[in-house]
Length: 416
Image 1 (cartoon, rainbow, N blue to C red):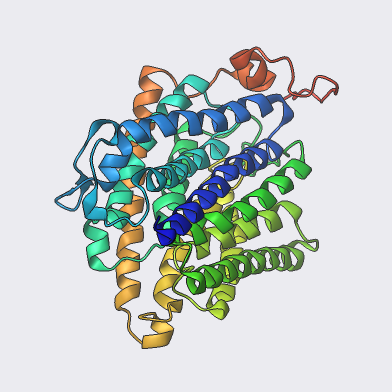
Image 2: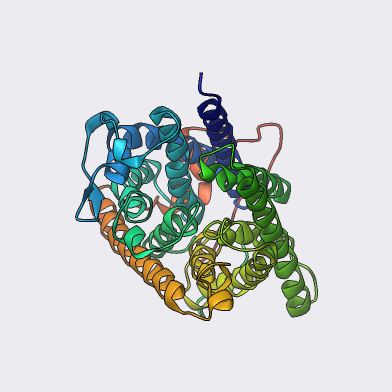
């Protein structure tokens, strides 16, 4: 037995389990930050993101992402991932690598459900989940991790600030924009109202689960349990960025609004985690603090930009957390990287490549998501009826009287 391969394989599989557990974190965040009448619908979407994504990524997505490159744009398609993929130079079994990549693909898909929560048809959402895992995400993954054109330019995204999180964030932005705001979110003068989630406790639990799972998301991307120095550094940079993001968001809201905002602080931690994911292996611990602090700023003012300027209703802040912080963290690799970063080398070369990658991925994801959501809207309809939205998706989409049958919750009464 090659013990080195065994160690690497077990490390990747343990990391895979941690990343899979992040699905529970997403489910809790999205459920807690939305209203009780839609809790079952949120759970179903998160469950089916992973179930649908696992199958379609195995059948098509993995080969599009990691097959032999065709023009640097996408991989050669092999049904059911039926190829040896020797060009990847894997030191772990192919199936171990495949399941690790599967949980990443599911993460990109599930980001979108929170931004489109409380007013999206379940069947229409399933179609979206199918397509993003089939082609939108794998194409970007090929550009960066599968030997595509961005990787050839030296674009650095170690664990997916752009590949995973920005793809999910930009798709969430387009989906929420096309879908329109929830009933009662905006007034006629354009001002917005708070539609509070039903359980801050569940939301906080979800954030802690995600923080925990990120110790598989980032360190697991080494694909080697023997590279102990790299793993240890990545654990540190990951944790420091999350902590700094939470502290930054807390103090900004404290100064700006007179009180520290709980929900924004929770999202600040997530924003720090998303931002550090691109350069977690390439920056110092001090650089990680800087990235986290900047992410906290982006969370607070980015959320306001999305809600008040763009008038996009994002119940959980997914666009700011994943889209804006993912892009910011990717750019900051070009600033804080200990090799080639602006502060270390004085060169803008890496920063330029990072900026090109951010723009290219945003352009691809926004354009394909626009086409996808518009097509779904025309063919199936994207949004539920006013009656369904006011009553709650649990009852009329799933026949579920209540996700909390032992409790009563206030029904929404909205006048237009």
